[in-house]
Image (tube, rainbow, N blue to C red):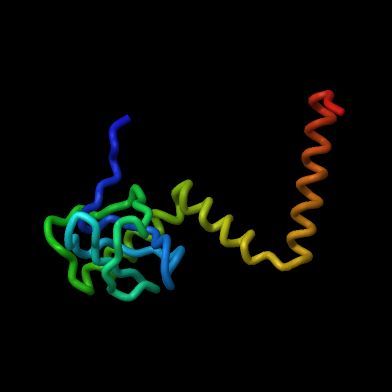
Length: 126
């Protein structure tokens, strides 16, 4: 399978480190082999290393660097598309579970135990 997620103008990324961790942003400019400039709805325009972002499949073709208004428009277009993707759904579920309170964690654990018990009964395991 060929590699299909390249660092390019208009590529949607997930910030993986720093104050904006977990936020979505768009690559607005490529500075050098290790650094890009990003901007997003909750991410101020900043320079970040490529090691600190996760590339997604969503991108908008652009032959040049994006200005502030273009970046905002691309974000508005790509973020709903990302939220419908499998990766976006997994991220949303992970965020929901991370924000559980004590009772919700206990309920989820109890439901998981009941589910495992039913599966083991159906499979004939002890």
